[in-house]
Length: 348
Image (tube, rainbow, N blue to C red; front, side, top):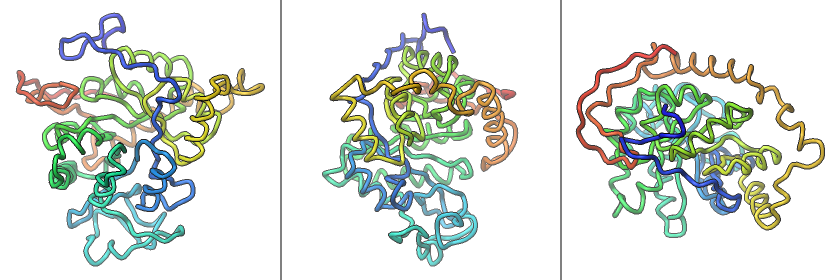
């Protein structure tokens, strides 16, 4: 990654992104309004929008018959009446009958149903951050997503600009460029080092765990991203103190399960900027108040994250940067042929 004094993108000087005031920071409902409704359901998504969410964050998995579901876990067990791996079971006749354990009881929504919701006239301001779980083969996931998206009239202007592909693993990059070139790409993860190694040039922004941005290294990364024109989103921020700290960073969006609480706090802080300050001793001690904020914890979290990337991905093995030589690295997503480049294996 280049130094902040000469950051370029595709040979052009990068345009810095603005430091946003609290009123301009977007609220993205993490799995909808999941603090009080079954996560990743249409009821949760609708509630998040009603509570003032500017965006929805949700996860995708593909069933054995190729249907794309909005669901977080690779298995059905934790949150529903179903059991077992999603990729081993069909939607038709099996998962279509599964319901949430948490009330009000809900079915598992399809990707197409969530897109229908976004295309309703009152919801055409809402962004969708699609968390593409690495257990899925992107060559099964992305072509079907592309087929669904292209069904909608004027999808290139009314829908595609509001969809963000959230990518955990570098093996998803080539398929994203090939199948969904008009969608923005954000890396989701825990590690600025992983961003710099695999995703810096290929993604428009990064969705990073809140704790990993605490401390000097996290703040340095935030400054570098802003100077390079890379957007930053922060997850999952439910504590009021963390909400205030994240807003003080001037990021693009904050992901939260507590949409109503965040939008109320954002309004309060926007009207009375002095309320952004933490109160009492928290003003001085907040950065030391949780083990996740410490640099030693960050090192452990990064190593654990790398182990997960090597073992949980649909194609386990050493981390390898795919050959993207046939594509331009234009952050707008417009593809054009460039000189081919060889694949590069990176030890991480």
